[in-house]
Image (cartoon, rainbow over all chains, first blue to last red; front, side):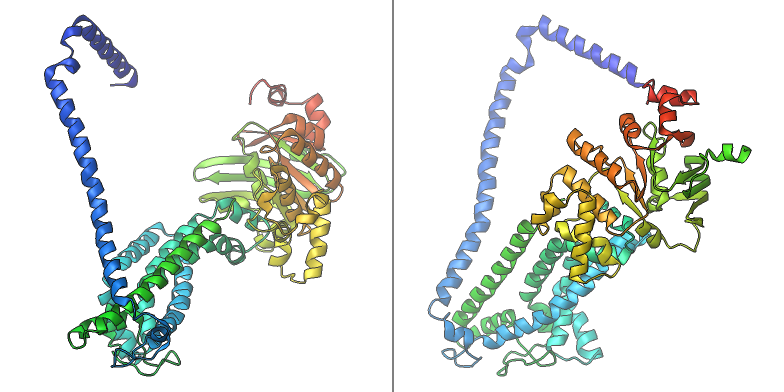
Length: 320
Length: 263
C-alpha cells in the first residue's frame, strides 16, 4: 500500500471514529464503570510503585550508612597521626600503616605511567590511525570484555607472566604491571571517547596549515582531549588502588617491616593490610579497629581521587 | 588561439595554478568534470555557483584537503608553480604550508590567541619566543586584528567574537607566509559588519597574496574579485574578468544565475 492510500484510510478511520463517538456519546467507554475501576487501580499502582522505588533507593543508602557508621565507630581512637606514620607491628597499640601508604604510592608510580602511555597510545591508534573498521570493532569489543574480567584472573596472569616468567616475584614492579592491566581498559575507553569528541574542524584547521598527522595529534587532538584522558586515568587509579585479589594471588607478603625503597622491593598496600588484619581479627580483636582505621584512610583517598576526576572534567571542559 | 580559448585563460598574465582536465569522484559520483583553467597570481579569483556545484570541492583540491574525505579519486593535473600537486615531487605538507586555507566556520584552536597565530611556525620548528612574538604581531596586523587583541594575546581565542575569530584564522594562515589563500565562504557565518571587515581585509592583502574565494554572495564576488569563475554541476561554465561576468556574461546559464533566475 502506498503512502497516499494509507493516509486516506487513516483519515477515513478517524472520521468513522468521530462519527461513532458523537452518535453514541452516552455509551462512551471512558465513562463506563469498568473503566473508572481500572483507572482507580492504575492510580493506586502508581502510588505503590513510587514507594517501592523510594524504598529500594533507601535500602542501598541504609546499608552504606550502617557500614560507614560501624567503620568510623571502630576507627575512633585508633586513627591518629601515629597510626598514619607508624610502622607495622604485631602489637596493635604500636601498629601503623606508613609502610602500606608508601607501598600504595609506589604501586601507583608504576600504574599511572604504564596505563597512561599504553592506554593513550592504544586510543590514538584506534581513533586516528586504524582504518579497517572490522579490526577496530574486534579490538574495541576485546577491550570492553577485558574491563569485565574478574580481577583475580588478572592476578593469575600477573603471577604467571610478571611474577614467574619475568622473575619479578612479588615486587612493586610485578604488582604495578598486574594492576596496570586492570586499569588499562578504563584509560583506553575514556581516552577514545575524549579523542572522538575532538571536533573534525580542529583537525582540518591543523592539516590545512601543513601539519603532519603526528603534529596534529600532539598539538591539537591530545591537548583538547586531555581533560577526558586525565579523568580516565584518575578513575583507573582509583579502581586499582583499592584492588586486593590480584595482589593476594601474586603473594604480596603480610608483614613488611621495611618500607619499599624502589620498584624491585617487596611491598604491601592499604587494601592488603585491611585484608590481613580482618583475617587475623580472630587472633587479636584490636586488629578489627586497625582494619577500620585503614578503611577510612583508603576511602578518603578514593573519594579525593573521584572528586578530583569530576572537578577536572567540569572545570577544564573546553569550549569550541 | 584555439588553445587559449580552450584554457579560458585571459592573456598576458602569470598563472600560479594551471588546472588541466581535472576530474574528481566521490565514490561513483563525478563532482568535478573536466575542469581546465588557470588562476592568476596576486589576484582575487571568486568561484560562484549554486550549492552542490563543486566549488568547495574545487578549492579543497587546490591544497589537497579534499583527500581527507574517504573514497576520493582524481584524474588530470593541477600545476602549482609548474609542479603537479598530485605528483611525488611536492609533499602535501609543503603544499599546504604555501597554500593557506580559511574555512566557512571560524575554527580557531581552543588555545590562546597567541598560540593560534604561531601554530604554523611552531609545527615548522620555530620555538624562539621573540621570533614567534614578531610573527604574531606581523600576522595579526596584516589580518587587521592586532589593535583589537594586543592586550589579550594570552586569552582563549573563543572569547573573541565570530568576526574576530575569522580574522584570527586568517592571521593564523598568514603566519606561515603562504603564496595563496583559499577561502571557503569565509563570511557566510558572519554578520554584515564583520563581513565588511573581512572584505576590506581581502582588499588590503590581495597585492601580496593570490586569493581564491568561494562565495554564495554575488555582490561579494563582484565587490572583491578580479576574476570570477561560474561552476554548475561540477563543470566550469564561464571564467572571465569579474566586470565581464557581471555585465555581459557569454553563457546564458551564467546570466540566469547572476540575475537570480535559479540557484
